[in-house]
Amino acid sequence: MSQSQTMTEAIKIRVENLFFSYRNRLILKDVNVNFAENAITALTGPSGVGKSTFLMTLNRLWENVSDADMSGAVEIKLQGRFRDVYAPAMPVTELRKMVAMVFQAPNPLPMSIHKNIAFPLKLAGERNRKLIEHKVEHALRMANLWDEVKDRLNDDARSLSGGQQQRLCIARALTLEPEVLLLDEPTSSLDQASMAAIEELLVGLKDRLTILLVSHYLEQVSRISDHIVTFDDSTVVS
Amino acid sequence: MKPRTLEIFSIVFAWIAGLILVSAVLVLLGYLFIKGYTSLNLSLIFGDTPPLRALLFRTRVFDGLFPAIAGTLVLVILSIVLAIPIGISTGIYLAEYAGSRIKRALDAFFDVLSGIPSIVIGLFGFSFAVFLHKQYSNRIGPCLLISSIALSLLVLPYIIRTTQAALEGIPSNIRMTALALGATRLQNVFLVLIPRSLSGIMSGIILAIGRCAEDTAVIMLTGAVASAGVPRSVFAQFEALPFYIYYISSQYSDPEELMRGYGASIILLLLCALLFAVAYGIRKGLSHFVFYRP
Picture 1 (cartoon, helix red, strand yellow):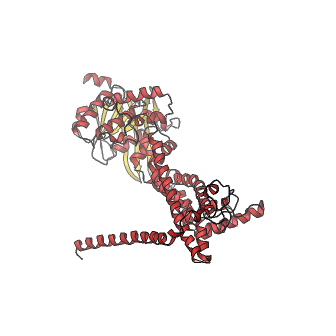
Picture 2 (cartoon, rainbow over the protein chains, first blue to last red):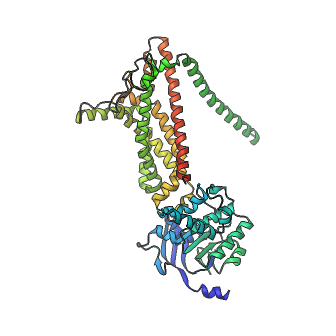
Picture 3 (tube, rainbow over the protein chains, first blue to last red):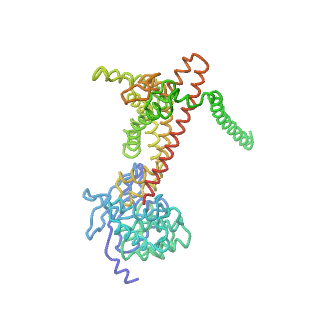
């Protein structure tokens, strides 16, 4: 533990004076918080205090929600230096390739397993088939899913079990080798075994990237997280 | 009334309403068939001309429906081809890009457009043809192209509305999937949202096909005539099945001619069924192509 503590000293994400409102209702007020690099930080707190919204301010996904507004500063250390994610010089598509997100409910696209994993590469304009094959396999291995699906890559992704679908979504988020992975209650719709598989997978990933995990399960939080950030009354309390 | 009685009452009412509707359709189809089946034969379509020669456009058919069938088919395809790109793009714009104020204004505009009676659209097409005739060339007049433009205007609101509704109905978790993976808005629209909405968009197109095939008011003012032969170009006048049905039922000289009107109605229905089948086929093929292409 002490070793992981020293490893996780470096700061990856700095958030200052963050306010967020939706339809003129304040969801987040004056959030100031830092997140450590190469660690799993759990975001906990009662429902409806803006934890999921907070994740969306880090990859700017909220900008696709109408009637939402935000102020404050978010800086993430990307490619070795801190960058203001809201700066005009930061293209939002590039940001989201480096700050990936996994949602509460598994959301595979209605296509084959292979095409789901290769989808971010397609978005990025990658044409090299060999490279795509390699990256798809790599992502599926990172998500501990390769052995289960390697013989059925052309099956519809929706034919997988719920837990497998969620690991597929994690693999898909990992395809472009992001530096930060945001997860919004990724296990809340899954059974115990699937939950354990995902927890194990996340612990294995933290050497490569920084993980922020919104979770309601206190046991899950204490099992896998290195740091805990608690939200209450629209802001961070600890 | 007790809740239980109310429930039974609603169920019975719903069943009766459904039965009335289904039987109305069946009675209509049965009536058409009984009246028209005696005239249904090859000579109804090709008259005295040998069918093969007519199909290869070697010999003009004077005494059959072949030119009207060809005219309607070309008219529908041309109108839909004109309406699809404009309608779908407008629907995408309204659902994905328009700000709330522009959207409200355009919504009202398209509601008005969809409420315009077809005879007024026909009149517009006619005036348009007269304008072109006077301003540019006296060779331009009511013709297949003018009819298609007017018809596409008539069916645009269907395509716009169904495209918009299909896109807006996509749940936000699917909407966010590709965006969270670094997709641009345009990539999201074309790679995820449109493929997801194909069946909704297609139902609008099918509605539009039906409307184009049956509308008489527009085409009788913009270029449909009783005798023109198979359309030679988009600048020529043409024959069409609904116009033929209208013409024959108002001007028939003997019962046999009226029978041919019923026969033409059956053929029009079959033609619509064929076009619907093609549209369904395209829909299936398209979504498979978009999502499962290796």
